[in-house]
Length: 136
Ligand SMILES: [Zn+2]
Image (tube, rainbow, N blue to C red):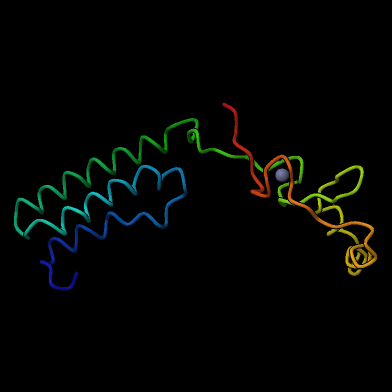
């Protein structure tokens, strides 16, 4: 990117999205990808700069729309209640969240595991993902 005009590289940096929370990245990333794809195939010049600036303005507006949205969207998740958000449950009759065992005094959980009394298994509710989709 060092061989590009400063006007081009200067605009491209505003399409960064990695610092944004996930629901804003979902809006910012596709537009940033388009900006980079077009810079790859188009020559530097006033029209490219103007186009990038308008794309940047559109991106900023759309990210603000996402900030105002009451629901972050279908990708929204909440911590899984079955496993207490740790992704694991005990293989006991109760199937309690593995966090219950982790909160025991140091050594207790390890001792029970070593004795074969209990072991962690993937949470059946979230499949070990630690979160489940939020139903709007
Ligand atoms: Zn779970």
